[in-house]
Every structure is written in C-alpha cells, then in structure tokens.
Length: 231
Image (cartoon, rainbow, N blue to C red):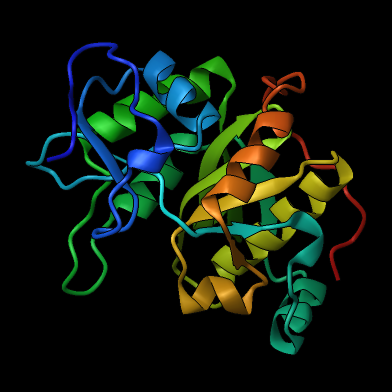
C-alpha cells in the first residue's frame, strides 16, 4: 500500500517509491503551488488521471536532458535555419497548457482542470514557463514546465506542425545552457526524447544533482531568450 497524504503531510522518502509501477510514491494531498514546489525540489512530480486521487512519482531511473547534450538532427537543423517558425516565451501560457491537454488519437489527457489551475498560478508566481512556436501569428506548438534555481522540469509539449515542439525544445536547451542550468527533467523515458539527447540516470544521481541546482536564485520574471543561434 502506498501512503495516502492528507493536507501538507510530508512526502515519504524517495527510496520507498514502488518498483511497479515504477516510481509511485504516494497518493492524496493538495495540488497547491507550495505543495508542487516542495515536490519538485525533492524530485517528485504529480501524474494522475481525471477521476483518480493525486498520485506522486519519483521513478528510478530518471530520464533527463542535459542542455548541452540536445541533439539536432539534419532535418531539424534545416527547419531551424529556415526561419519557418518564430519562438516566443511566456506570452500565452494558458494556450500552451490547453494545447498540451488536448487528447491525442485515442488517448485521453492527464492535464485536467485542477492541474491547469495549479500551473497557471505557478506561472503567475514566475516559476512555470512556456516556450511557444508560432507560424504567421498562429500558435502551432510549444512546451511548458517549472523552473527552480538552475533546474527546469519539463511537463509536456505539443505540436500542430512538423518539428514545432522540437524547435521549442531546441531553443529552450540553448537558453538554459546560456543560463548555466544543469538539467531538464523529462521524467519518463520515451524513444522520442532519446532521439533528442535525453538519457536515464539513477534516482540517487538525479537527487544529488538536483539538491545543488535548486539552491541557486530563481529566475521568476517572464522569460526572454537571448541565446546564440541554435543551428
């Protein structure tokens, strides 16, 4: 049985997370900004379906992307150099979340109304950010996540045009490298993320790196990118 949290009960030690399903640590509690920030600082994230209690996770191994290891394929490099898309940051956070929440094929969505409300508040506080891909004034892709210190926790991304979400991630990685961020948390391994340079590390290594990165000052103003050309 996993622990069921009430209110602001402390999270259990990460070592108590289940092996199957990988990383399930606790259920219940609250989805407040303070609770979310506390979870992220300890390497824990929420992930649950619409009618389920809040589920908290800390998988082992953990999939991460080190900003300097982002892989730009030949086709993506061509897209980046074409100036087909414009990249903006923090201009339509709500729309990016809605884009990520849209059902894909026969799959539903785990980004429900409560999640959207909680992350919108984190955005208002300056901790949640969106990287947006635009084409001729239309939002066609992007991603959002949470920033604490020099750590970025990627939450979700979406794409309505070829390479639109990859372009957003390429620009994010370039800017975070410029800002000396240490990791982008990708949570769970997917073949798509691996092609972009993500890799697995142990939970213990993730926690060790995390505890250093989250103690840097926070960049809580709306983000503006000023990195060198990506490709």
